[in-house]
Length: 253
Length: 74
Ligand SMILES: Cc1ncc(C[n+]2csc(CCOP(=O)(O)OP(=O)(O)O)c2C)c(N)n1
Ligand code: SF4
Ligand code: SF4
Image (cartoon, chains in turn blue, brown):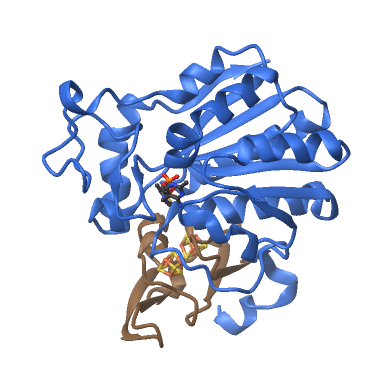
């Protein structure tokens, strides 16, 4: 069959979400941030909540997230997104509010804000992009950097005796009474991407049902920081990140 | 059994040549162009269009939402 006969409006099965802007994302080739932005856009689109959703953007590579989704945004200081999201949701309880944060933002400088928002059970969604390093600033070691994993500030690999242990903050947050849904996903295959989208949808639905805090971690790649091709980075993630950060639900109440 | 026939259209201007769509395609439809786009990336294209089943896998994994997918029951 001729391609021209297939490429017709009535045969369309997938196109870019209208919630995404036309602005070209500044992310490196293969970056997981782009995939997760797309999934959030699709979930917002499918739930019909574009007019009432407010995102809180982090400091980190996703600092320009507000340029990429046609929704309202508030930029937060480094690590403070859960505190800002708390304020927004409490003042505007009818809005759908989410924070979007990297592991440096959520699990290092913003640890206090993260833990207390989750412990208070703020009725928000937190999206957590865990690529194991500080991507934006040049691939420095983060709390989430694996034992033995190389980063620009631990070029021979993380040595816990000197550098401390990697932090499973998601496991920690799952223990807090305020969290209702805590789950860990990835975007390394089409099936994994579809699962991540389902988890994001559930997190937003939980907010509609006033269930408290939902946290969706996405174990992610940073091919520039890891100094690998995007495809290699995916393989490295499967081999090294998944054993320490296993995928699946940690809590679903 | 009716087999589905698919086709993709790639936004070659936006494509960053990451190759993740090529890896994700179950039927090996996608190849990277020899030519580069204005950004200097080898963009993705259908190298083997006959094999496309319109499964949308490539579009799901694309970080830059470059791929539109069409499908008919052939
Ligand atoms: C108060 C403050 N301290 C430090 C920085 C420098 N800084 C910018 S981004 C960043 C880390 C971002 O890493 P992560 O949250 O993991 O996000 P990624 O870039 O990997 O997506 C740091 C330390 C800053 N901008 N503000
Ligand atoms: S729609 Fe499926 S079969 Fe067609 S190119 Fe994309 S991944 Fe391959
Ligand atoms: S996944 Fe997207 S950006 Fe990457 S090569 Fe394919 S079309 Fe281009």
